[in-house]
Length: 60
Image 1 (tube, rainbow, N blue to C red):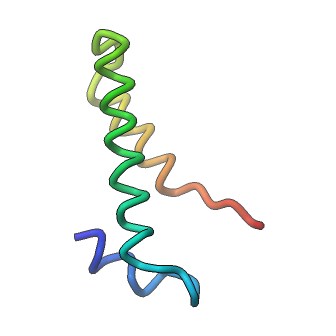
Image 2 (image 1 turned 45 degrees about the vertical axis):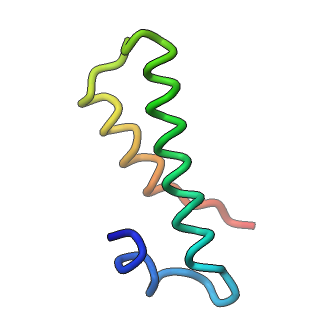
């Protein structure tokens, strides 16, 4: 899904496959952090945070 949906939005020169791996590993990192903190956040909170992360942009 990410491979198809995000392709149109990537800047020229960005490796699409690497970008998707980066995003997937970020999500896995969130899940690991959640596990290591004894599932202290609700799934609704995690979902909200993930949406906020994905909607962030960094101008460089």
